Length: 151
Image (cartoon, rainbow, N blue to C red; front, side, top):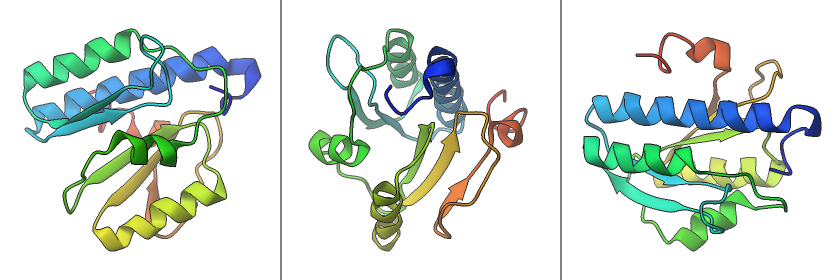
């Protein structure tokens, strides 16, 4: 939560949850597997739920999103992914929903391209869209509106 600008912190957190929930529904309806790792807190822990498909699994993810809270200290998303010990199959699409990315995270995610993992980034602030790295697709919320989020 520390990454979110103070003035609109809770608005951006709410938007991040809304975007995530919409993507869960979208990909479950496409019969794709979906997983979840968050820097937010559910019952005082950072949640990670392995990738699976099906509407029951989608409901589990949505129920977790409904109770997620922001954490008060800094959290390194790379550490969260590594500590979750989730094996990502080749071709995994990772969609990062965050207010910003630090350069170290950009380089770490970009290096995963060699492992046939694909990162897509959705900033949940009012910033204008900017491409942060050639191997990382970036989408603005306005681009997604009506295409992905509300199918």
